[in-house]
Length: 272
Image (cartoon, rainbow, N blue to C red):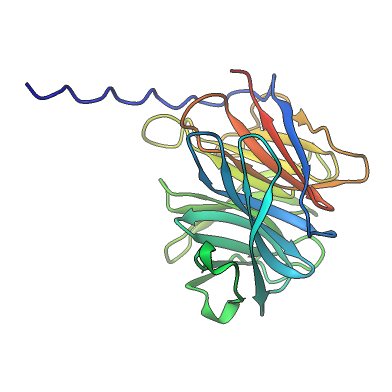
């Protein structure tokens, strides 16, 4: 007789607290002097190895790294960005397609990374597959982090300060957008990552929001409601946490990466 089908995967956990999360990794990303702005996990292997991309705003570029389950991050490729201005956020769309956020223009710009085998290559804004205008550009407090929810085909993004806002925008025209929350508990908001929940709908989805000034991570529902107390990050006093990216929730504890100026990569995980 045919073998029975494999059992369905266990439902993804709903993240309801950051209590018990602790730092499990701390590295300096070689080749970056300063201005590490954000990062996004591209792939996660069953053995725990990761591939991720980071964005820097001076010089304006993307850098792709690998991180083995045990060991140091290794640079895989560098992608100089031309005609981009003040790149502050990056998030994975699918495959090797990513979205970048520009603080000054307020735009969310979709581009595709060249094949990693190329070792790098220039990415020109003129070749972007899509450019979405948010209307929140500001040279000193505009759009910072961005994240993407594939189930909703929507972006969540941040206005940094004065006021600090968490916003949502449909990826498809007419790009309807709405403000989810005005954040007053921390001095600013810098990076955001979408955490998919269990089952249909977005009730179990969560947002991780990182703050530079307070050096904390906030946990939110998709409607902007805060969930539980914030997590204080274990970073040097002079560093600036700027970005955050959830790891795939396939198995094991919930983990995320944080990206801090000048060039600090950290990994945090919750209880087993």
